[in-house]
Length: 594
Image 1 (tube, rainbow, N blue to C red):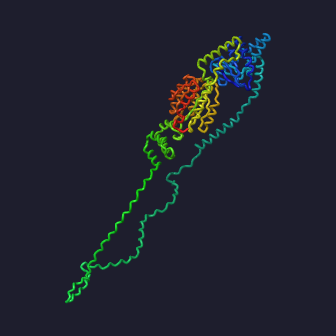
Image 2 (image 1 turned 180 degrees about the vertical axis):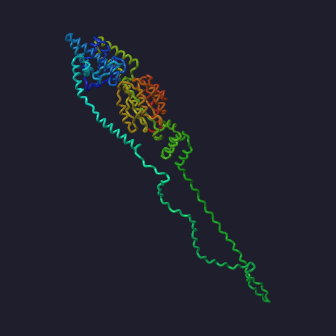
Image 3 (image 1 turned 90 degrees about the vertical axis):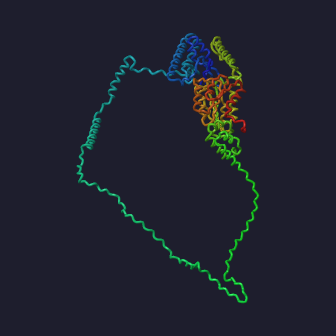
């Protein structure tokens, strides 16, 4: 017995289906083929106004509105044939007493044409939920009167012929004739313009004079003037040159003063006053040597500027990516000075781009550029199997499913139907898989650094997953609220979930991590491995890590294609630890401040 869907009974009545399904199925199996007996889904009351519908048919249920036109016509034909056989059976039972009339009424109620919104198809077979609540389709229009035998159609045809003949308008030919005459006149005028009109005779060439071309007046050409000599500068009247002093001839010397002859008595020495001896040139007075100034005491050298020293260390690092990265993360001056930090980041971007992207996960938010902060996307499995307890083993699940099948068979044999006995309730005890997964992913989101953005994708029903959005650090409260509100639904569109998460992540200019938390395989007929290989080819810095709850190995190819890892979890403690390890590349390093 397979669950087909969960639908709300608001606006629809399921009371008759809940009360009469067992008897209806028994009547149909007794009188009609099994395919007709499987037409109506078995209802089961769930919480609130939700009704769960089950069927023994195999395959993936598809709503009637989503079928291809050809498949929809086939399903509709099968549905109409089986409803007709049920109506025919009701007619036979109606003549079998009071009990037969009651059964016939039940069959007619169930055979009312179903609402297509509650109609499904499983492997091409129709399946009706909320049966008995629709209306039969409108009957097809009667065939055309011309195709029916008898005199009436003929008479009608005969009567219509005169009317058609009378209604046919007579064709008027004169407007066409007028149009043709206008066209001929237009062609004649065109011929005259091109060929018929006479052109004035051309005068001989010699007699014609070319029209005088009025040339624009040109300025008279002046002979080049000789360059005028610049006027001679006014020469001021010659100043009276100083008269040269009369040169004293070399022979002429100043006459000596006549010497007075000595007295005869005293022989004085001749005075030489007349001839004054040349005065000796004054000896240059030696300038006093400047006294050496006392040497000033050596001033203490100023302490080197720490910013200048840090700049020298940056220059010395050159293009060494490891040295630049060490300066960015450990040098106190670089960490505190925005100018120095920008200089190091610019050199890293220019020379060490790939290494900087790879090493960004090892840096704290204040140590790395914001555009290089890693990203996270969580692909969360919200299928129906996630509602099973983490404590339930595979053997226990298999035994419970087998026991439920045996119970259903016994109920059909002994009671003529299935009264809704459920023997699998113990599989849904706490701690459930989905409860532990929500707690583990919530803990990871709460530990994300202040510059890491994260996205969330739910894989909950076929044919596609549901993107819950990509949340910045400022929107982290909204992401936590979405995680806490997750409830299990049904299918597992794993491939579509991985594709939508890949669209959220960069994976080229920064490190990106996708964490897939799941307990099952793809159930929507897609190929998640091919999606992962395509992402690995287009986004070299994208890694997919898989947290495998049930140990199915379904996500192994996702990790292998992108260089990620698979983490198996068997209980709540392992699930929390494995989820934290899967997201380790986006969590802050140990040396960062909390």
